[in-house]
Image (cartoon, rainbow, N blue to C red):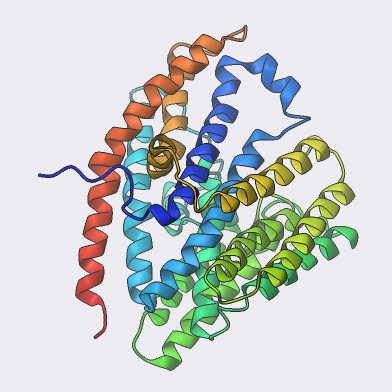
Length: 403
């Protein structure tokens, strides 16, 4: 059996792979620094929130790629098949390994409180657990809930034929973020879950999401419209009203992804660069203004967030300017395995923390050694989990692709 290529054949998107690779390394450092460089981390975080930097770069890249993938296919059904085979197999493998490590006593599994195993499993199966009042079994999974919300919104706009209005959507979401924070909207975390109950909300959203995806994938135009609108409505309700981050930040995350889409539209000639530049200015201004208005508290450091956000936007802009340059193969290869890097590293850290323990003094050598162990492991998960599952997804999509 021929090994799958480590670098995608499309060199045109190499700059995006490079950005994903860089973002993955920064997120890994953010989490591994708890174990190996805690003192340095405490000094750095108030000035530069490495976690927010990495995920904002990821969200910009997703915003650029995901709608283009749907529109290239022109079929919601094959889009969802592609996403399911892209995201779920590695997710399932990593969660299984974590649970097994927990049973063996070599990794600590997060406490899910009073929730039953069934509701926790169902919430995670939707990949919206972060927005359903359910603690993430693996902390990094929280960003996938926003990715899934973005998928639902992208499909909604596609089914109602408003998908080319990415710039308008980005501006509206960013403006809503600014309005929510200046109006003093301060909802508790998972506010809807507290109002209607976590179990009933999980059951309702799970059913509604299943109906939305099935209907949006149907042949009937009416069903497609209904499914798209239903899924989009779920996302627009859950993100601001039931996340664990403040409502303004949830809306900023969505706005950032649609800003990435607006950049794609300008790059592909569907919009003008002037319109995209205006959109970027508005989104950045609203995001930074919201962060400053929100201020500092125990869970949020204004300066660190703002600097991380601005650097993420500048990093994406630098990548965009370099899109016609030759990208080093090492960076594109790192981007290719970035999903593995993102999901595998917290499991490895959980095992280290539970067996060896965290360092009392900073050790750059151990930090480097951690990366040296992690990256070859991620090459294996890409080779034996990600690549085969994506190949299966392409085969299934070809079979169901309408003529």
